[in-house]
Image (cartoon, rainbow, N blue to C red; front, top):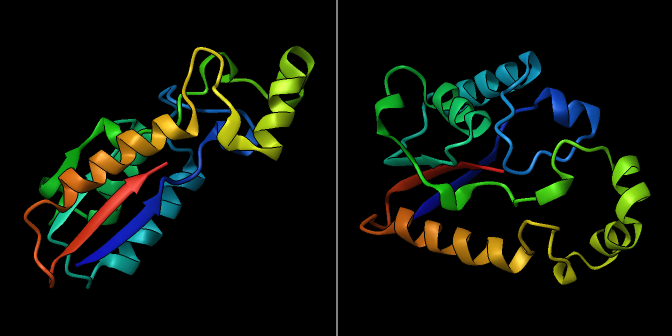
Length: 151
């Protein structure tokens, strides 16, 4: 089986350097254009199943990537959502550093050791994303193609 993984297009918050996490920040104009380019790239590619996070930036990227002919196959799975950054969501790194500098340093140097304040750890994300990938692959054959748009 072939698995195509795509990241959602850009957002205003990503351009500003804000931690997005699970806040539902929509695609920016740039993100829409990126998703449309992905759609052009995938236009002739066989896709047998498509999933995305339910967050609008991933869902919209997947919709544009699939195009009008295939958008009906899109399924949503919260297992593919971005890490929950908890109280960091919406903040710049400089703001996080001022209020939670030690944890930010750990996030940059040893991210596997960090539990986000009121959020998740990378292990939490791995556990839910792996389960989501297993569900997404279930029943697909060796010649099938899965598209996953996530964070």
